[in-house]
Image (cartoon, rainbow, N blue to C red; front, side):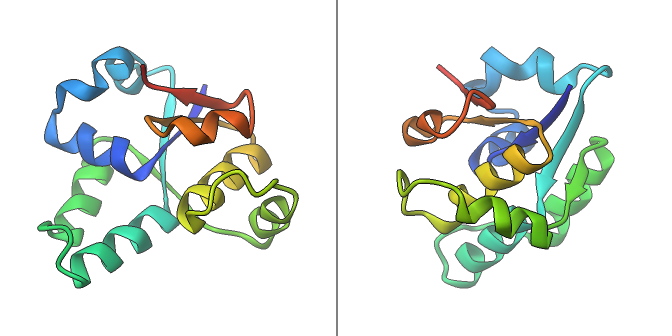
Length: 126
């Protein structure tokens, strides 16, 4: 299975947080391909730059690579998919991640309640 991690889920995975316990086996399974979107790196860079997150983006990207996570680039096809989304959620990064998941297709793991309404591809951590 191909899986896209929402930005906060990726951070929890790097930190070894118990919040990912319900999906830890799925993320660690060698039968699944795990991805982090370039949009997530952009979101984190903005938060780090604004002082809202104390993290080293280079180290996070290295940890993702070392964990075997792929990087999902943003394409024009993803932007077209974004245009078809109803205005359920206002966060542009979350909307782009959902659009990517739909366009690829792949599952997206999140803890965001609002994203479930977009697609059956959204896998909400309970």
